[in-house]
Image (cartoon, rainbow, N blue to C red):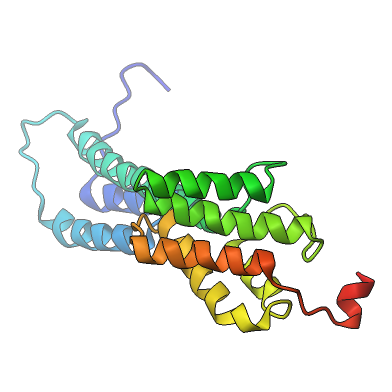
Length: 212
């Protein structure tokens, strides 16, 4: 290829090159946006007329601008997916994200948060006290990654009278921790009272549970 060789594609050739480029997998992250952008380009590209005085690389400049815009869409889409993935992962995080903290300590934290008027923290710590207490009493296995709703489902047969309250408390835990919602004093108090009742209650154990 000589130094003086210049690429000067006509409109049809430039359009074909652009279509080939946009068909590559990396531009398929957000197909709907790219398809709309491509439809606009194909509608308007035939009507573009470059003055004869413009240098031969003008068509390349036009292609570069369009491809840059498509690349920015890909980057933005990738960031959105990473953010959504992080949120999804957070939604599955363990209730007990600290190792070796006893139920009594979670209970103490809930009391301190209540005294400070931090009802959201009080609710979270009270529910963690429920989960930690169940492990200490060998009512559930000490399994990492257990979610709030998994705790509620595992304890519902053991404390059948509290099944509805456990499900409600699990919803409240997720709403505060992952949904960014605040907790009222009444809701935090209900979870703390539930923890206190479960701590005193005699579990209902079937033969399978006893054998476990």
